[in-house]
Image 1 (cartoon, rainbow, N blue to C red):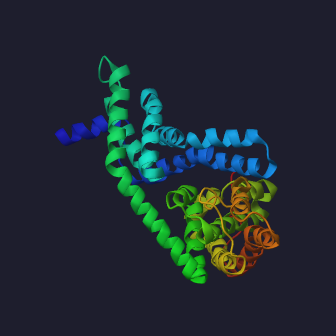
Image 2: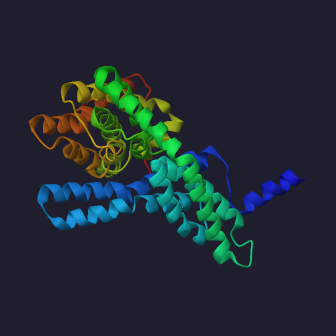
Image 3: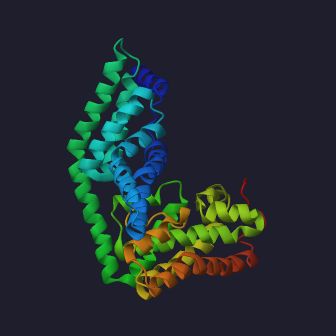
Amino acid sequence: MEKTGVKEFLKRKNVNITVQTYLIDALGAMAFGLFASLLIGTIFATLGDKTGVALFGTIAGYAKSATGAALGVSIAYALKAPQLVLFSAATVGIAGNELGGPVGALVATVVAAELGKIVSKETRVDIIVTPGVTIISGVLIAQFVGPGVAAFMAAFGNLVKTATEMQPFFMGILVSGLIGIALTLPISSAAICIMLALDGLAGGAATAGCCAQMIGFAVLSFRENGWGGLLAQGLGTSMLQMGNIVKNPKIWIAPTLASLVTGPVATVIFQMKNIETASGMGTCGLVGPIGVYTAMGGGARMWIGILLVCFLLPAVLTLVFGEFLRKAGWIREGDLKLDL
C-alpha cells in the first residue's frame, strides 16, 4: 500500500523515473540549451575573429558565459518543472557546468529538478522551500559528482581523439558511423560531442557522420518530400525520419553506409578537423562546416573537404546505395514520407 502511495505521489508530482525522461528528453533539451549559449557564442566568436567587428566578440562572451544557466533551464524545462524549480535550475546549471561540464550540469539539474518538483507547493512557504531545496541539492550533487564525471568524460574523450590520431582510417569509420547514428536517434549528438570534448580529427569524423545522415536522408527522400523535406532534413535534422525508421529500419542503411565512407575520407584524405561545439551538429544551420572553418582557418584542402565530405559525397553515395535498396525492395514507395 505504501509503495502504491509513493507511486501515486510521484505521478501527481510529474516525476517519471525512466530512460526516456532522463537520457532522451533531458539530453535532447540540453542540446537546445547548448545551442542557445555555447554554440551560438562560438559562431559569433568566429564572426568576430574573421570580420574584426568587436560587437560579435562581446556577444560571444556573454553567450558563452550563460552556458551553465541555459543548460539548467533547458533540462528542467524538459522535466516539466514548475516555475520556481525552473528558474532555480539556472543556478544549479551554473554549478554543475563549472564543476563537471555539461554532464555535471545534466546530473545535478536532473536530481535538483526532481527534488524541487517533489516539494513544490507542499508548504506554506513555497517561495523559500522550493528554490532552497532545488539549489542546495543541485549544488551539493554538482560538488559531489561533478569533478569525477568531468575527469571520466575528459579521459574517454582523449582516448577517442588519441585513437583517431593513431588510426585515422578505422577510427574515422567508427566515429563517423556512431555519431551519425546518434544524430538521427532522439538523443543529442551535439551534446555527446561537447561532453566528450570531441575536437580535432575525431571532431572531423563526427562531422562527416552527421552530414552523411542529414544530407543523405534529405536527398534519399526528395521524391517523397520535395524541397521542403530537403531543407528540413538537410539544414534541420534527420531525426525527422525516426518515425519512418521505426516502421522500416532498412531506410537507415543508405545514409549510414555513406557515413562509413565519408568518415575516413575526412580523417585520412582531407585531415578534416572541427571544434567540439560544432562537431556533432552536421549541416544543421551549417554549424558543422562553420566549425570546420573555425578549426582549420581556410585553405583549398579545407574548402574542397567541406564541399565533398559535408555535401557532395553524402548526397551521391546515399542516392547510389538507396537505388540498390529500392531495387531490392528494401525501400518502398512512401517509406520516407514526412508530414511536413
